Length: 239
Ligand SMILES: [Ca+2]
Image (cartoon, rainbow, N blue to C red):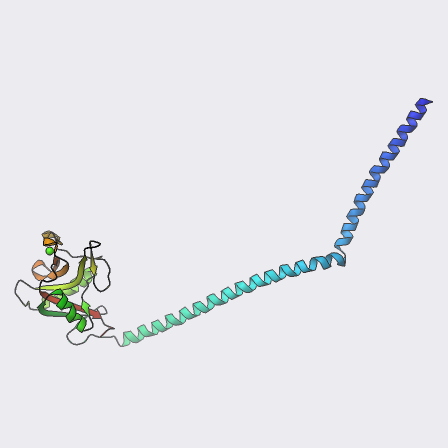
């Protein structure tokens, strides 16, 4: 009798457990179905639409920003193009009617040079150049040095064997460098008379620069109080 009861109890338990498992499965399936239905309902769409709208608005804003940036770039390119066109036109005009130097000045690569054969100290030489809207010449290339040398050779020396000219360079003792007075730039190109040990800064007083015929127009540092001829230079556009 006890055995029959035991078997019956086991059957009841299996029945209950099977029912519970089935119920859970049914609940899961039902939830899935509800979810699928919910996705397709207006309710979900209403909730999702603002998000979609916000997303699209952000995208539109970003596109508008990019468009504005492109527009700005185009405008800047257009301005540059106009400037370039104007410069090209001005250059064409310049080619047709090139500027020239005043009488007494020698033209060379957009600059005018005047070789003044009057013995003066550097300060006086500088004042002479300034009075003509020019400055004491800087020499920044081998080619410019060659031009100056060729022009000086055309001139008759004021004093035989002592034909010297101030150039516009000065020693800056604070930074121990040679500087072109006009631009404030350090010397790049130089033509020092190295065979004589120049610049030798004799007696620590040689702060000015000269080019000298008797040294094949190589450079020498001299006291600014020394007297020499002077070379003035100015832009051809600055008569
Ligand atoms: Ca010297």
